Image (cartoon, rainbow, N blue to C red):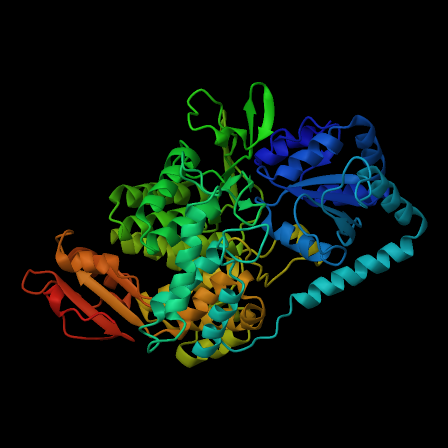
Length: 638
């Protein structure tokens, strides 16, 4: 029946191809079909490693009788939230008007004009615990559509207006050092001092918050001894150690599971996601937990890395054991040599691959694992060759079929541009290869509404004045065309959750570009983006770790270190590779590489040369540099 899903790029969609439900892929066509038939649309959103998505597929979408009701009364659209994160964000915002129990599978009913009028998550095949059955929901929704159309349309209009209003954030001001200290104290107050982590159950790694706490810990000295430095560092390290010692970590293959259902980190949901493990690799490497970092890197490189050189989105929680498909059983074995591993979602996502590339480049530099940096460079080269079009725009997702690689029609999102740009900048610092930094700059330039788009060639304060009236970052080519046509696209989606939002990723990359180029346009774009969401971050710090990291960087002193050394093993080079200044940058380049960066417009490298043929370190504050030193003992890092 669902022949439209058989050749989908998303493995999640292909897994529903044999359903008796007449599924459509996301696009304008199913909404046109709903208008032609004058029936509502059902949008079902999930992803490959989602346990309850599989449950609902088996219980309801595989039931021919229930599928018959669905096919008769609705046009059904199946969406992979990882392929279409903007679609998921828009419908999730709408669903919040109907339920506080948000999650996946997300089940949304909408008019043929794409305006939601009812939503929920998992619906069982029979009523249970006060939750109606899926059949009851279908019948009730269709009855409302048929007999109370004016009420349905009034609700859908109200939801659409609420989404539009929520997208208009009022800018605030960046938090002060005192407010950042208060945030650390607030997070500490939510710590589970017995088992580690925040709150009770379920327990998530919240890697972005851990990275923020590590930033606050490292920023203490440059913040004139900010009082929260020790507290933040200790809090992050306690949680990292608690997770490493818990069932959330797979000690056999090194990766971390998505979350634990119990307060003591036991009974995990066994899917292993690329984004979690990439961010946790950065965190454990920064905290000096070498053994755990090595395990995560091994998981990325031996399990999630695909033959193409890119990384799969995640690994399923269910595996086939003794002919039965069961969740988590595979991970209970210490000897897995004869077992079939859980399936990979082999969809390659640009943004998430950027997270993995950045983590491997950073961890490889800090822990002196050149093979990790080489793997990051290989993945980046593959991604740029396949996911960047000739016009410079990005592809959101791809997958490999026997007939070759297929590119998704899904629009690339801001997270793709921001995460890939951030990764390429980290890779440029790790390798000294300017080409990665140049590409990163091109990606962020494409997202900043520069003066050319305003119809004038402006410089300096005029640039900043013109940009101040514009959203700080926008996706090249605009948002998803179907959402845009329906008026439900979110221009400024701040949601972060388990990984950075597109806005925080782009802001982080822009700030680092400022550190390398001295171009105030990048700093101002980063600052304006963070001012836009500072009020939300101050209210809900547990949900805005990545944004708070950017705010910490913007609040810190600008400190830059360039070591020019043709000997990669020089003492100065080793010192620079181990130093990770918050709000600053540390770089090791050869003399030829320094000249290439300078020629490409990266002002920090102007005039950086060897001194009498010896390695030299240039320590700068706000682009004002000390005299170069050739002895590591003379290098006074803050």
